[in-house]
Image (cartoon, rainbow, N blue to C red; front, side, top):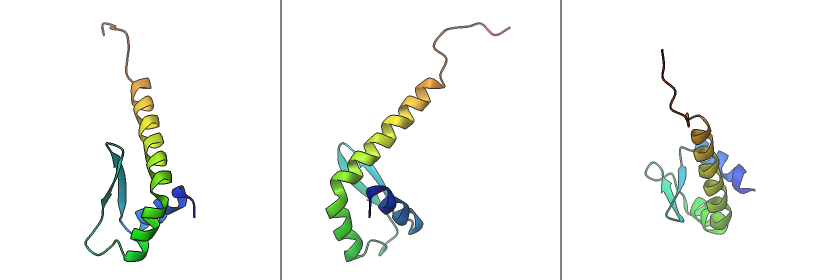
Length: 75
């Protein structure tokens, strides 16, 4: 299973991952992270962090593209 497929599977289970200060953070309902899921998260940690970091960078780039860079008076 790829990191992207794993993220999709986790989202279906209402398990959300984020990358904070180069650490993997898990936000999930109590009991949602089973021992099996935890094992997969540990095994895929580096790939998940890379994917989440890449997605965050793309989101930041998209946000910057949508912002005006010149001051133009609106009349």
